[in-house]
Picture 1 (cartoon, helix red, strand yellow):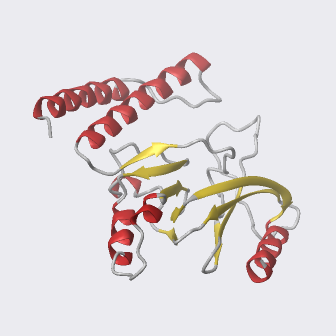
Picture 2 (cartoon, rainbow, N blue to C red):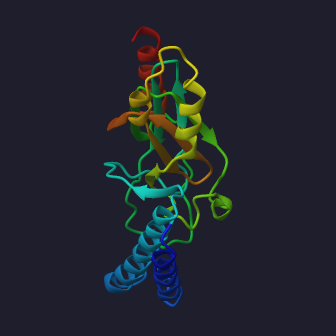
Length: 226
């Protein structure tokens, strides 16, 4: 490990944090696009500095990924369906409310047949998945906080300890192939009331303009019948 490089990256992160802290946090609906853009840029620079430092230290960190859907921030109501070979994650997608001023949250009911607009993510060759703690009130206690974590987004964990652990467990198999485990990717989705994580080769995401009960029935049939 290059001590001079680490010191330089630590200084860069300290500077990025200071810039972020002195940039006011605006509401998109109340403040100008310029103010909102300035805050977002400062935040992005801080996250990038966190990732560079973690990478130099060979630590795990969270990196942004290209994800086509944006879920409802306040009540996405994620649901995980899985069997031995396939995993699906569903959630309510975000809907634009032109009158929203940041002072209230719209509650979604997964049982409501009139509430349509469901995101579905299918994970290919998923070998492990979990949905639960932490929620957004304690994200700052997560090991990836301060290492590139961006709340309410989909990310990939680089230098994943979970992948390393899974690889070590499976290394005792008589037909163990290191190359197959190197293809795994560690995905993490930061929701309002929970966090989803999985190990998979890749994913496919789509928007279904149906209610949650209709989508869950469709996915259950796919899990059972293939």
